[in-house]
Amino acid sequence: MLDLTMELAAILILAAFAAGFVDAIAGGGGLITVPALMLAGVPPAQALATNKVQGVFGAATAALSYAARGHVDLRRQLGAAGIAFAAGLAGALCVSVIPAQALRYVLPVILIAIAAFFALKPGLDDMDRTARLTPLAFTALIVPLIAFYDGLVGPGTGAFFMIGFVTLAGYGILKATAHTKLLNFASNLGGLIGFALIGKPLWLLGLAMGAAQIAGAWVGARLAMRIGARIIKPLLVTASTLLALRLLWDLI
Image (spheres, rainbow, N blue to C red):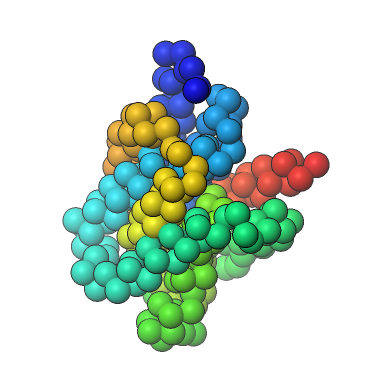
């Protein structure tokens, strides 16, 4: 049984606040919380499970914050959220049978490509563009793929949803951010249920970190709505790059 000191628990709660803030704006909060949990001595599977506990609170808070300001209609996303939930649950249940380690060799390349795309492509702002996929095709093809990854591995899911909405659905950056959150919440919740069966999350710690996630997501979502692409783009680039470097470090 893990024995956390008050000081270590406080550090993890502070990490959860930072993760909620970053995740509400650009995704990638797991880049902060998963390594923090593992450095605190939580075993890898249990760290992923506990991360799902606290992550659902941040994603839910961000989704409700964007919806309250009219940036997304959550009712219109319920079908896609149901698919994301099922795919996230399936991904978590497949952790023991799918070689997730193979994904970690590919993910740094993908994340660096995402960072380069948002850093170098001119004209990316909060204006909508021509969609390459219909909403039905996006929901049927892209949502379950990313949500399954969320259940299987996790960190970076928000960035993957974001680039999907921008490049394939034609959304502006702020609109894409707003539409990412309910799907991320649903896939997180599905992953949590799957991991609860196999990973035994630390519920009390996860709930304490979840409270900090709520506060961080509330602040982050409001800042993103106030500033838009000017803060979302650099934070997305930074989060994707740091996550790629972290994954590369783990492979060394």
